[in-house]
Image (cartoon, rainbow, N blue to C red):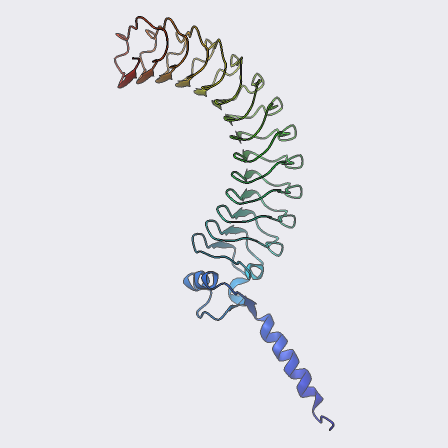
Length: 336
């Protein structure tokens, strides 16, 4: 039998196609409910009008128990996406090429492809299950947080605009920061570093490199440094003479036999617990408010110049006398 109205078939097909094009598939009920709550949809029917989302620039769907973010591709104008603290095992943002900020921490992601997101300036993918992360295309990246993953390598050679890096609690054995000269904040706690070269990172104001396997740490080039955490390593020496702006130093749990603080006159907080110090001169550190030097081999300790001290811990040493008559600001002391 010959169909006498073929144009109707064509029309119907085009109508169906147009209808599909007007809607974006959203199979996850929690994601769609979040879109309903935000006013972009009105009914749980696994779809949202594309016209309602195509011009949205910022989307916050954190803490929604979302396991599938299918439909995010319809947000073609999106520059800011927060989907942290959900149950995502995958995340496809290849269609969101305008993204500048992506926060997807605290999910269950095993991989993350941001190669198409060349405008990204901030990426937070902390607390996932990532074994690799390629940010070579993200040359505009200024802030990167990828802590608490399973990364064994991290190539940042193309990320010359990087200002802040937090890559703690991974399985990194080395980290090349030679191209990241704009870096001001570095957090690489709890990895497997035996060495860390920060000689080219002269803009650094904060280094947190505790709980690694460092046997040496050269911070002589980092004259802008105000905060240094290098505790929980295997350091036998530490030269901070060039770091005259240092306000906080934590070098506890190392193997230091001496520590020269004479140039660190801005120092406010000093933790040098559990080393092998036989002497400690803090006479130049008149701004010091917190001093914890317990569990060393000190036989004397002069804190007469440290009149701003509010906390002092010096127990487990070999002190026989301690004069704190000048330290009238003390609120906490444990030197027993």
